[in-house]
Length: 354
Image 1: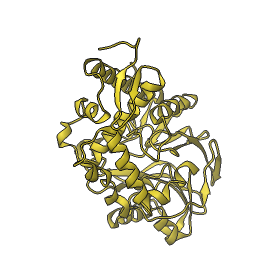
Image 2: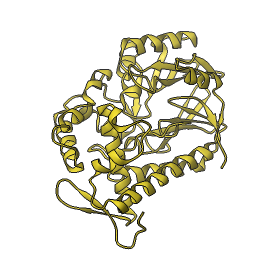
Image 3: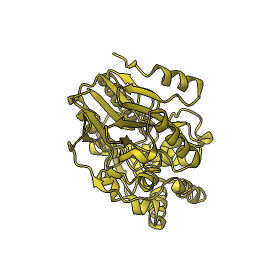
Protein backbone atom coordinates (compact mmCIF):
# COMPACT_ATOMS: atom_id res chain seq x y z
CA UNK A 1 0.00 0.00 0.00
CA UNK A 2 1.26 3.48 -0.84
CA UNK A 3 2.24 5.72 2.06
CA UNK A 4 2.14 9.43 2.66
CA UNK A 5 5.24 11.57 2.11
CA UNK A 6 6.07 13.95 4.96
CA UNK A 7 6.73 17.46 3.69
CA UNK A 8 6.64 19.37 6.97
CA UNK A 9 9.98 18.00 8.11
CA UNK A 10 10.52 20.61 10.85
CA UNK A 11 7.01 19.96 12.14
CA UNK A 12 7.62 16.21 12.04
CA UNK A 13 10.86 16.52 13.99
CA UNK A 14 9.17 18.76 16.55
CA UNK A 15 6.40 16.20 16.90
CA UNK A 16 8.98 13.46 17.53
CA UNK A 17 10.78 15.68 20.04
CA UNK A 18 7.48 16.59 21.75
CA UNK A 19 8.06 20.32 21.31
CA UNK A 20 6.19 23.11 19.51
CA UNK A 21 7.38 23.49 15.88
CA UNK A 22 8.55 26.83 14.47
CA UNK A 23 6.49 29.34 12.55
CA UNK A 24 7.08 28.59 8.86
CA UNK A 25 6.44 30.20 5.51
CA UNK A 26 4.67 27.39 3.65
CA UNK A 27 4.38 29.32 0.39
CA UNK A 28 5.10 32.94 -0.45
CA UNK A 29 2.42 34.77 1.48
CA UNK A 30 1.22 31.74 3.47
CA UNK A 31 2.39 30.97 7.00
CA UNK A 32 1.83 28.15 9.48
CA UNK A 33 1.63 29.27 13.10
CA UNK A 34 1.52 26.60 15.83
CA UNK A 35 -0.64 27.63 18.78
CA UNK A 36 -0.20 25.61 22.01
CA UNK A 37 -2.99 23.55 23.56
CA UNK A 38 -2.82 23.14 27.37
CA UNK A 39 -2.68 19.65 28.85
CA UNK A 40 -3.57 17.98 25.57
CA UNK A 41 -1.73 15.14 23.77
CA UNK A 42 -2.06 17.03 20.45
CA UNK A 43 0.07 19.84 21.99
CA UNK A 44 -0.76 22.47 19.35
CA UNK A 45 -3.14 23.46 16.60
CA UNK A 46 -1.74 24.92 13.38
CA UNK A 47 -3.22 28.27 12.39
CA UNK A 48 -2.66 29.27 8.75
CA UNK A 49 -2.22 32.93 7.87
CA UNK A 50 -2.66 34.18 4.28
CA UNK A 51 -1.22 37.55 3.29
CA UNK A 52 -3.73 39.33 1.09
CA UNK A 53 -2.01 42.67 0.39
CA UNK A 54 -4.67 44.44 2.44
CA UNK A 55 -4.29 42.31 5.56
CA UNK A 56 -4.36 38.71 6.78
CA UNK A 57 -6.91 35.92 6.42
CA UNK A 58 -6.57 33.25 9.09
CA UNK A 59 -7.75 29.64 9.01
CA UNK A 60 -8.62 28.56 12.57
CA UNK A 61 -7.57 30.43 15.68
CA UNK A 62 -6.55 28.26 18.65
CA UNK A 63 -7.74 27.91 22.25
CA UNK A 64 -8.79 30.94 24.27
CA UNK A 65 -5.86 30.96 26.70
CA UNK A 66 -3.26 33.64 27.36
CA UNK A 67 -0.45 31.37 26.13
CA UNK A 68 -2.31 30.67 22.90
CA UNK A 69 -3.08 34.36 22.40
CA UNK A 70 0.58 35.25 22.94
CA UNK A 71 1.74 32.56 20.51
CA UNK A 72 -0.74 33.68 17.85
CA UNK A 73 0.34 37.31 18.16
CA UNK A 74 4.03 36.38 18.08
CA UNK A 75 3.51 34.16 15.03
CA UNK A 76 1.72 36.90 13.11
CA UNK A 77 4.55 39.30 13.94
CA UNK A 78 7.12 36.81 12.63
CA UNK A 79 5.05 36.69 9.44
CA UNK A 80 5.40 40.48 9.19
CA UNK A 81 1.92 41.44 10.43
CA UNK A 82 -0.09 41.80 13.61
CA UNK A 83 -3.42 40.77 15.07
CA UNK A 84 -4.94 44.09 14.01
CA UNK A 85 -4.24 43.18 10.36
CA UNK A 86 -6.59 40.19 10.40
CA UNK A 87 -9.49 40.61 7.98
CA UNK A 88 -11.19 37.24 8.43
CA UNK A 89 -11.04 34.03 10.44
CA UNK A 90 -12.21 30.99 8.47
CA UNK A 91 -12.95 28.31 11.07
CA UNK A 92 -12.89 24.67 9.96
CA UNK A 93 -15.17 23.56 12.81
CA UNK A 94 -16.53 24.51 16.22
CA UNK A 95 -14.14 22.68 18.56
CA UNK A 96 -12.33 24.93 21.08
CA UNK A 97 -8.84 24.55 19.62
CA UNK A 98 -10.15 25.92 16.32
CA UNK A 99 -12.92 28.33 17.34
CA UNK A 100 -11.78 29.41 20.79
CA UNK A 101 -9.86 32.58 19.92
CA UNK A 102 -11.92 33.65 16.92
CA UNK A 103 -14.05 36.07 18.94
CA UNK A 104 -11.00 37.62 20.61
CA UNK A 105 -9.38 38.12 17.20
CA UNK A 106 -12.53 39.84 15.95
CA UNK A 107 -12.58 42.19 18.94
CA UNK A 108 -8.93 43.13 18.34
CA UNK A 109 -9.12 43.57 14.57
CA UNK A 110 -12.73 43.87 13.39
CA UNK A 111 -12.31 40.68 11.35
CA UNK A 112 -15.31 38.65 10.25
CA UNK A 113 -15.72 35.03 11.34
CA UNK A 114 -16.86 32.23 9.03
CA UNK A 115 -18.26 28.84 10.06
CA UNK A 116 -20.50 26.21 8.51
CA UNK A 117 -24.17 26.57 9.56
CA UNK A 118 -24.34 22.98 10.86
CA UNK A 119 -21.75 23.94 13.48
CA UNK A 120 -22.94 27.51 14.00
CA UNK A 121 -26.34 26.23 15.13
CA UNK A 122 -24.67 24.29 17.98
CA UNK A 123 -22.59 27.05 19.57
CA UNK A 124 -25.16 28.30 22.08
CA UNK A 125 -25.91 24.85 23.53
CA UNK A 126 -22.26 23.85 23.57
CA UNK A 127 -20.62 26.94 25.04
CA UNK A 128 -23.28 29.11 26.70
CA UNK A 129 -26.41 27.38 28.04
CA UNK A 130 -25.05 23.86 28.53
CA UNK A 131 -27.49 22.31 31.03
CA UNK A 132 -29.56 20.59 28.35
CA UNK A 133 -26.42 19.34 26.60
CA UNK A 134 -25.16 17.74 29.83
CA UNK A 135 -28.60 16.22 30.39
CA UNK A 136 -28.68 14.69 26.92
CA UNK A 137 -25.16 13.36 27.37
CA UNK A 138 -26.20 11.75 30.68
CA UNK A 139 -29.09 10.05 28.88
CA UNK A 140 -26.75 8.82 26.15
CA UNK A 141 -24.30 7.42 28.70
CA UNK A 142 -27.17 5.62 30.47
CA UNK A 143 -28.32 4.14 27.16
CA UNK A 144 -24.72 3.07 26.51
CA UNK A 145 -24.59 1.10 29.76
CA UNK A 146 -22.16 3.35 31.62
CA UNK A 147 -22.39 2.55 35.37
CA UNK A 148 -24.50 5.06 37.29
CA UNK A 149 -21.63 6.20 39.51
CA UNK A 150 -19.51 7.04 36.45
CA UNK A 151 -22.11 9.03 34.50
CA UNK A 152 -21.86 12.46 36.21
CA UNK A 153 -18.08 12.60 35.80
CA UNK A 154 -18.22 11.59 32.14
CA UNK A 155 -21.24 13.77 31.30
CA UNK A 156 -19.50 16.88 32.68
CA UNK A 157 -16.02 16.00 31.42
CA UNK A 158 -16.00 18.56 28.61
CA UNK A 159 -17.38 21.47 30.64
CA UNK A 160 -13.89 22.44 31.81
CA UNK A 161 -13.00 23.56 28.28
CA UNK A 162 -15.92 26.00 27.99
CA UNK A 163 -13.58 28.73 29.23
CA UNK A 164 -11.32 28.08 26.25
CA UNK A 165 -13.90 29.52 23.87
CA UNK A 166 -14.44 33.27 23.54
CA UNK A 167 -18.02 32.92 22.41
CA UNK A 168 -18.75 34.75 19.15
CA UNK A 169 -21.60 34.35 16.69
CA UNK A 170 -20.14 33.89 13.16
CA UNK A 171 -20.68 36.66 10.62
CA UNK A 172 -20.58 34.43 7.52
CA UNK A 173 -22.03 30.94 7.09
CA UNK A 174 -20.11 28.72 4.70
CA UNK A 175 -21.76 26.96 1.80
CA UNK A 176 -20.48 23.69 0.35
CA UNK A 177 -18.19 24.60 -2.58
CA UNK A 178 -18.49 28.27 -1.64
CA UNK A 179 -15.58 30.32 -3.06
CA UNK A 180 -13.42 32.96 -1.37
CA UNK A 181 -10.94 35.09 -3.30
CA UNK A 182 -8.55 37.54 -1.67
CA UNK A 183 -5.20 39.01 -2.72
CA UNK A 184 -4.15 36.32 -5.18
CA UNK A 185 -5.53 33.48 -3.09
CA UNK A 186 -8.52 31.32 -3.94
CA UNK A 187 -10.20 29.02 -1.44
CA UNK A 188 -13.21 26.77 -1.83
CA UNK A 189 -15.01 25.26 1.15
CA UNK A 190 -15.61 21.50 1.06
CA UNK A 191 -18.22 20.34 3.56
CA UNK A 192 -16.84 17.22 5.26
CA UNK A 193 -19.13 16.21 8.16
CA UNK A 194 -18.05 13.50 10.57
CA UNK A 195 -15.66 14.92 13.16
CA UNK A 196 -18.29 17.63 13.61
CA UNK A 197 -21.52 18.20 11.67
CA UNK A 198 -20.19 21.34 10.01
CA UNK A 199 -16.52 20.51 9.49
CA UNK A 200 -15.07 21.99 6.30
CA UNK A 201 -11.81 21.58 4.43
CA UNK A 202 -10.49 24.42 2.26
CA UNK A 203 -9.16 23.81 -1.26
CA UNK A 204 -7.03 26.09 -3.42
CA UNK A 205 -7.24 25.03 -7.06
CA UNK A 206 -4.69 27.64 -8.13
CA UNK A 207 -2.07 26.61 -5.57
CA UNK A 208 -3.00 22.90 -5.37
CA UNK A 209 -3.27 23.02 -1.59
CA UNK A 210 -5.77 21.32 0.72
CA UNK A 211 -6.24 22.70 4.23
CA UNK A 212 -7.73 19.60 5.83
CA UNK A 213 -8.56 20.79 9.36
CA UNK A 214 -9.08 17.72 11.55
CA UNK A 215 -10.73 15.70 8.78
CA UNK A 216 -7.49 14.23 7.40
CA UNK A 217 -4.43 14.16 9.67
CA UNK A 218 -1.16 12.43 8.74
CA UNK A 219 -0.87 10.02 11.69
CA UNK A 220 -3.94 9.92 13.93
CA UNK A 221 -7.63 9.46 13.20
CA UNK A 222 -10.04 12.17 14.36
CA UNK A 223 -12.66 11.31 16.94
CA UNK A 224 -15.95 10.34 15.26
CA UNK A 225 -18.62 9.97 17.93
CA UNK A 226 -22.33 9.52 18.37
CA UNK A 227 -23.32 12.64 20.28
CA UNK A 228 -26.52 14.60 20.88
CA UNK A 229 -25.05 17.31 18.63
CA UNK A 230 -24.12 14.97 15.78
CA UNK A 231 -25.96 13.65 12.75
CA UNK A 232 -27.45 10.13 13.26
CA UNK A 233 -24.69 8.22 11.44
CA UNK A 234 -21.48 10.24 11.93
CA UNK A 235 -19.04 7.50 10.89
CA UNK A 236 -20.98 6.90 7.68
CA UNK A 237 -20.86 10.66 7.04
CA UNK A 238 -17.12 10.71 7.77
CA UNK A 239 -16.34 7.90 5.34
CA UNK A 240 -18.50 9.54 2.67
CA UNK A 241 -16.61 12.80 3.31
CA UNK A 242 -13.26 11.04 2.94
CA UNK A 243 -14.35 9.63 -0.40
CA UNK A 244 -15.60 13.08 -1.43
CA UNK A 245 -11.99 14.31 -1.25
CA UNK A 246 -10.89 11.81 -3.91
CA UNK A 247 -12.01 14.37 -6.49
CA UNK A 248 -9.16 16.67 -5.37
CA UNK A 249 -5.49 16.15 -6.12
CA UNK A 250 -3.40 18.48 -3.95
CA UNK A 251 0.34 18.86 -4.18
CA UNK A 252 0.39 19.18 -0.40
CA UNK A 253 -2.02 18.73 2.51
CA UNK A 254 -1.95 21.28 5.33
CA UNK A 255 -3.61 19.71 8.41
CA UNK A 256 -4.58 21.42 11.66
CA UNK A 257 -2.36 19.13 13.76
CA UNK A 258 0.92 17.24 13.44
CA UNK A 259 2.68 17.99 10.11
CA UNK A 260 2.25 18.68 6.38
CA UNK A 261 2.29 15.77 3.93
CA UNK A 262 1.67 14.54 0.38
CA UNK A 263 -0.30 11.66 -1.16
CA UNK A 264 -3.87 12.32 -0.09
CA UNK A 265 -5.25 9.12 -1.60
CA UNK A 266 -2.93 6.97 0.52
CA UNK A 267 -4.09 8.65 3.69
CA UNK A 268 -7.76 8.37 2.69
CA UNK A 269 -7.27 4.64 2.12
CA UNK A 270 -5.55 4.24 5.49
CA UNK A 271 -8.29 6.06 7.40
CA UNK A 272 -11.06 4.03 5.78
CA UNK A 273 -9.12 0.78 6.34
CA UNK A 274 -8.68 1.67 10.01
CA UNK A 275 -12.42 2.02 10.52
CA UNK A 276 -13.22 -1.13 8.54
CA UNK A 277 -10.81 -3.04 10.78
CA UNK A 278 -12.55 -1.59 13.84
CA UNK A 279 -15.92 -2.69 12.48
CA UNK A 280 -14.59 -6.24 12.11
CA UNK A 281 -13.16 -6.12 15.65
CA UNK A 282 -16.57 -5.13 17.05
CA UNK A 283 -18.39 -7.81 15.04
CA UNK A 284 -15.91 -10.41 16.29
CA UNK A 285 -16.45 -9.38 19.92
CA UNK A 286 -20.21 -9.51 19.49
CA UNK A 287 -19.85 -12.95 17.94
CA UNK A 288 -18.26 -14.20 21.15
CA UNK A 289 -20.24 -12.04 23.59
CA UNK A 290 -23.82 -11.58 22.41
CA UNK A 291 -25.90 -8.71 23.78
CA UNK A 292 -23.15 -6.35 24.91
CA UNK A 293 -23.76 -2.70 25.69
CA UNK A 294 -21.72 -0.01 23.96
CA UNK A 295 -19.81 0.62 27.19
CA UNK A 296 -19.01 -3.08 27.64
CA UNK A 297 -17.72 -3.18 24.07
CA UNK A 298 -15.70 -0.02 24.63
CA UNK A 299 -13.90 -1.53 27.62
CA UNK A 300 -13.07 -4.68 25.64
CA UNK A 301 -11.72 -2.97 22.49
CA UNK A 302 -8.04 -2.28 21.91
CA UNK A 303 -7.01 1.34 22.52
CA UNK A 304 -3.67 3.14 22.38
CA UNK A 305 -3.29 2.58 26.15
CA UNK A 306 -5.12 0.55 28.82
CA UNK A 307 -8.69 1.83 29.07
CA UNK A 308 -8.47 2.46 32.82
CA UNK A 309 -5.57 4.86 32.19
CA UNK A 310 -7.57 7.05 29.79
CA UNK A 311 -8.90 10.34 31.16
CA UNK A 312 -12.71 10.63 31.63
CA UNK A 313 -13.19 12.95 28.64
CA UNK A 314 -11.35 10.50 26.40
CA UNK A 315 -13.26 7.53 27.86
CA UNK A 316 -16.47 9.31 26.91
CA UNK A 317 -15.08 9.97 23.43
CA UNK A 318 -14.10 6.30 23.14
CA UNK A 319 -17.65 5.25 24.03
CA UNK A 320 -18.97 7.69 21.41
CA UNK A 321 -16.63 6.15 18.82
CA UNK A 322 -17.85 2.65 19.66
CA UNK A 323 -21.44 3.81 19.24
CA UNK A 324 -20.57 5.39 15.89
CA UNK A 325 -19.22 2.05 14.66
CA UNK A 326 -22.27 0.22 15.98
CA UNK A 327 -24.62 2.63 14.22
CA UNK A 328 -22.78 2.11 10.93
CA UNK A 329 -22.98 -1.66 11.41
CA UNK A 330 -26.74 -1.26 11.98
CA UNK A 331 -27.02 0.73 8.75
CA UNK A 332 -25.22 -2.09 6.94
CA UNK A 333 -27.59 -4.66 8.41
CA UNK A 334 -24.85 -6.46 10.33
CA UNK A 335 -25.87 -5.59 13.89
CA UNK A 336 -29.20 -5.34 15.69
CA UNK A 337 -30.07 -3.34 18.77
CA UNK A 338 -32.42 -4.41 21.54
CA UNK A 339 -34.49 -1.52 22.89
CA UNK A 340 -34.61 -0.30 26.46
CA UNK A 341 -31.89 1.17 28.63
CA UNK A 342 -29.20 0.22 28.19
CA UNK A 343 -29.20 -0.75 24.52
CA UNK A 344 -27.75 -4.19 23.83
CA UNK A 345 -26.21 -5.13 20.51
CA UNK A 346 -26.04 -8.47 18.71
CA UNK A 347 -24.79 -9.77 15.39
CA UNK A 348 -27.68 -9.78 12.92
CA UNK A 349 -28.99 -13.09 11.61
CA UNK A 350 -26.99 -14.09 8.56
CA UNK A 351 -24.00 -11.87 9.37
CA UNK A 352 -20.60 -13.48 9.87
CA UNK A 353 -19.70 -14.22 13.49
CA UNK A 354 -16.27 -14.28 15.07
